[in-house]
Amino acid sequence: MKILNLYSGIGGNRKLWGDEHEITAVETDNERAKVYKSFFPEDNVIVADAHSYLLDNFNNFDFIWSSPPCPSHSRINFAKTRRLDYPDVKLFQEIILLDNWFKGKFVVENVISYYEPFMPRLIKEVDRHFFWSNFRIGKFQPTQKAQIRMQGKRLCVDRFSEIFGFDLSGFDLKNKRQALRNCVHPETGKYILDCALGIIEKQNTKQVDIFDFIK
Image 1 (cartoon, rainbow, N blue to C red):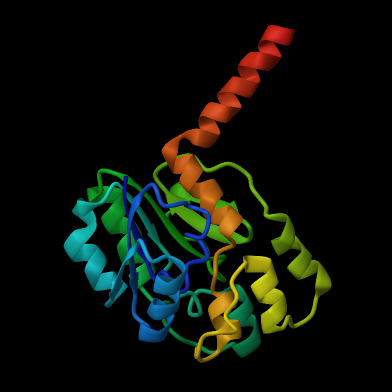
Image 2 (cartoon, rainbow, N blue to C red):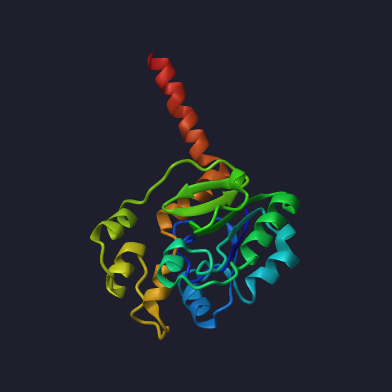
């Protein structure tokens, strides 16, 4: 399967996808792209504007994951700053484009917004994030991510590295903590890809069949 991973960062969502797929990652920050490539050398990593790349290339892929910038949509950021600003419309543009024109499976990830969510018919809330998709996503919560919030304190780089499974000690990367914070938890990334592939739905169907047989 040909996968497009947009705004890939250092690859949190991609970490548990394995190497059986043909994956193209697009990241605007050159240093983060280098880190991604070091972790996933088999992937085709492109340093470019992900938003423009999507418009020009979306029909070349079977599955698309997009994680546009989130600060202008964040309810936490809005509560802290109370600064009047326009939400970044790239998020909405990509959802509309994919929903109307893309023939494969897609998911667009972002934070839970401070305003009424856009196109709610496509949304599933997972791990306190919104996921717009054209396939069914069930309930899921990675255990370690829940522990982060229970601690209720600012976590250090080492703790984030432990939680997400990325050792950045050998990289000259600006703001390592932010790079890690921007990651989608690898377990969430794998769960959603499995949903897109129909693996989760098949597993659930088997469980129902077994239950019915026992009854």
